[in-house]
Length: 476
Image (cartoon, rainbow, N blue to C red; front, side, top):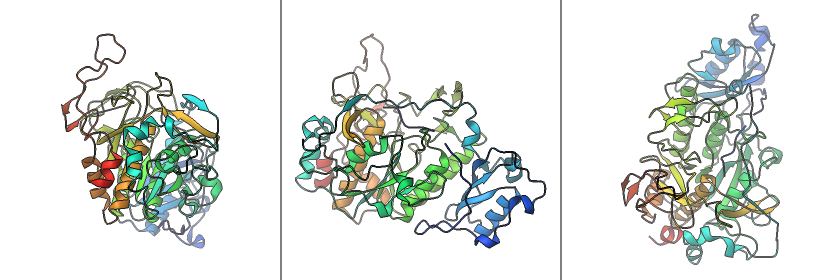
């Protein structure tokens, strides 16, 4: 299943969000940008910007510089010195400095339709168990793990996605509304309407794989005893813009979540290049947010993507920008998939029911830490069954593999509550079932290898350290 993508702007005065640790000035200390700077103009459109300041920049300084550049601060995260601002003035970027600000919205001149599809559709059956259809849970020994533990309520997995249906009977007991928030302005919004799904079932599907109830009805998650939080970072057009993700990571850190599941890559570039103008701003802001979350003991688990690309040697990118007319461009080792390829992030590839890398799954030595079931749409019911707002549905992709890994990490955290984020990531790697490179990777029988696996049995470009194992997670 392709990863989600798409955007809308909002101008908000920066206020202190309860529990989010975002700083701002009092409302009466914020001058109107037009009256404060007579040269400001407002022809529109109102654009949202991500602004990166030198580390330890005070909130007052950041807000003042944004105002002087004809913008308004939506939120400032002093822990990482990153702001989200809005401005209708086309000169804002030049005034604030293009070397430290970027607008993903500005890239979206010619927007394309959302690139998501369903593989099969299943009707809601509230009284019937569907666990017999969950080959993916058997593959990672989840039922055996549940005989020991289903997870602890003290463990919280933040589902950074398109929103989670709080009314689904398989999720109602797991979802923590008080820890949920929407991030579509770059600033956390705790109102239920901000974090519930609108146009996409993706987040609910991911949530079910992690924590659907083990109650004999519907499906069962990897860790049905843990809690989940809905952190909405996917807008109604399917985009995950960098300010959404930064907000999501900072919210998860502020709420002291244990793990975040990130079944996406950050728009509008499949590969974000550290040496390219604008993209280096995205890289730095997201890197700071992930590092801060790690320092607050939040483990980040992320999808490798469905481009079938070797992330260690990408070569070319023909999918970007995702919100405009894509063009083919060369990419090198400074170009990475965010957040999957950042330090301290667990990158996840996908396998089918035979424990073979799915053809769509990206891979790469050093980029993949573990693998998990993502499914194969070429076989009947070969995708992953999970919850959706309408009931249940099958979907394929690294989006589906990632919550299996996050769920196993949640089980480890449940039996090892003293474990910090970095150690939790190492334990997730250590419990994996070793998978050697396949001797023959010709998926379509043409006599040509569809991809080349490098490395050795215990660690390679297709599977990293191996297939996540729920039983091993709670017994090792």
